[in-house]
Image (cartoon, rainbow, N blue to C red; front, side, top):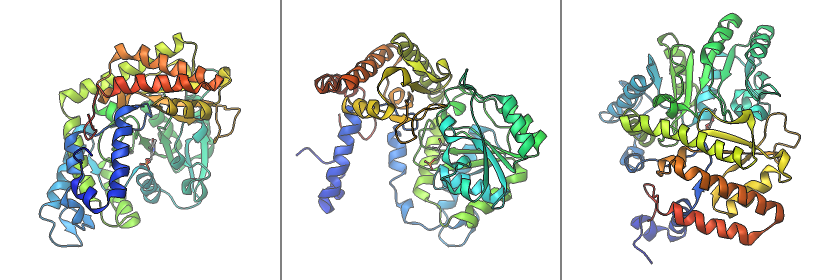
Length: 421
Ligand SMILES: *Cc1c(COP(=O)(O)O)cnc(C)c1O
């Protein structure tokens, strides 16, 4: 038995400790291509596991319902000031528990049940919380949905404008979970203004790219910016809502007491650290390296005959359309997993297959860039993906096992904080 990384946990609950250890090994030895995942720094990991966990703090700094907030108030104020500085916004709320509750708070602030709201359809690359039917946001509100053009795979802004003017939604969401291209926030802003809608940029996926200057910022163009903190921003699992001063009260009231109770102070601390890290010159390099790696990986996949939605990428994300490959997305994703390459299966726009068994896989470069892989590694990664998809078609398990050991050899040479060497 090697020295345990969590000695108290190991002593108290060896069963759970063993699961954590197994996860550490899995993360160390595999190549994580899920575009919404990342590895937090050692400092973020430490901040997220502190005694701040022990404190109840309903309310906001200086206006709490519990005493003993001398330090907690300063932690939250620090996170708020850093968010405002990094994103250039008037107001930031760092309390939402995650991206989905953050978006629900936006609905609570600006709409009533039954109102029309507009977002991108889930199968086109939008998020569940943008008014999709199975989500509370699609059943409590009347969701109308836009998509991408069949021929280009790009958002058709004329179609978005036509829908917005016909429906006059209370809220318009832009952003999504499977969008490989730059979002034109100015185009959305002019549409929202014409339609009289509150415009929300949900930048959960690209917040780190925005912070690092590798994607245009929605600040100054939209009413509200919603983001998770754990994707490209490389913080703990959490979320933030940022807005103009005119909306500050409505947003704060919606988060607490509208939707949530006490904030997760240990997470707030981790967010503060992540925002500090994202303001450093090294994070600018990181954000640009994420995009450079994604472009290099997309080029290497195209060379190997893969079909990519929209023909490539501008950001951290690539959506591979396997309709021409006789291996559906789920079969490919499971084979890649056996080969040590972790992805998720995903619908592609106008997918002929069902959402639980779709035609695509979604990959991205935030995690591998955090581990130090560069453009020079991307042809190797594309080769592994290509070989694994071919092996999946032939049910060739030995080929998948061979890739898995090559992946482990490379990845163990590129450690991440908290992972065993
Ligand atoms: C990830 C994501 C969310 C939801 O975040 P959770 O933390 O999983 O609730 C919301 N919107 C977009 C665009 C996302 O990518």
